[in-house]
Amino acid sequence: MMAAMEAGKRGRRVLVLDHSQRIGRKILISGGGRCNFTNIGARAENYLSANPHFAKSVLARYTPRDFIALVEKHRIAYHEKTLGQLFSDSFTLRTNRGDFHASALVIATGGLSIPKIGATGFGYDIARQFGLRLRDLRPGLVPLVFNPDDTRRWCDLTGLSTEVIAYAGKRSFREKLLITHRGISGPAVLQISSYWQPGSALRFDMAPGKKVFEALQESPSGRDVTTLRQALYTALPQRLADRWITTHPQQKWSNAALGASEQALHEWEIMPAGTEGYEKAEVTAGGVDTDDLDAKTMQARNGCRTQSFE
Image (tube, rainbow, N blue to C red; front, side, top):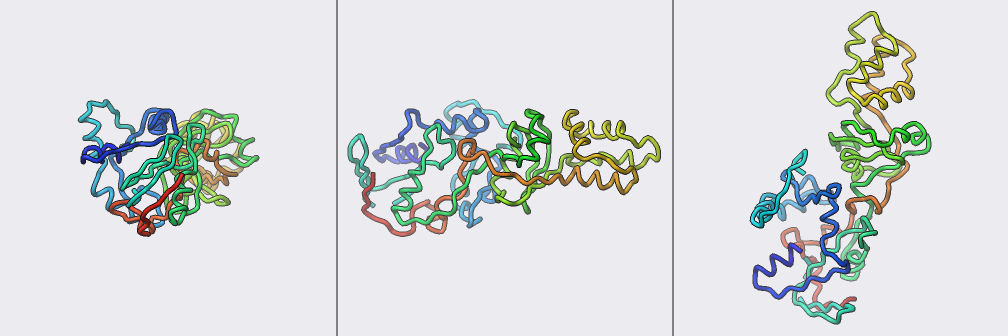
């Protein structure tokens, strides 16, 4: 839609084709149904790519502030949430509405995420037809599913959330974690899921910036489950704190043992069984290899010319 608008402003004859009954539906459901149209802090490093420099040129030419100016120009109200959140010379499109011919073609089909609102692999099929290489596709910004043992330990706490720092390798995000009936979700998990690889563990700091058991370590008396529970209540929702004590029973009360418990709280490690898949994923990671695209124009580098496809 943006490409069509800009082309129209430049006096081009424009045709937008969409197989859905309503264009832009995925935009409307993004951000939990609140229409997340940009992020004021967007930088090239926020984009997943085998070439981390690929997005720099495009973002320099059209910044989030430019898009916000467009929204404000049309007097569209918006709200800032936490954390600020083309192909190429002659083309023939054969459709059920007839054939269309164009000197320029923009394919903006989106990925495989949320097929129930019309997402398909059509764009990837066209990319292959044009000789463009594809990187492995996988669900991104997606809830994670617990293994059976963790399902039994945690999933009856469905709906509980708490602020965490989620880690996958060198990447980390500080946001809310949400326990679901099958695993974990929430902003922190959705963000880190794009960096998670099947078969690897994720680590969570369950009490960011807090020394939960420091008072207990400083006091030689009163070290029991009750005071331990009260300390955890300052960092976690009460039901989650109670379950933490059950799953991480305190066997000893020495400073060293309390220190180990503190470390465990800041380094909770889980091994997800998988993701909720494209049905719940907000984006598709992977896709067209950016090495095959021009970073300034998003145009295919392979010089493809007269093409016909259905």
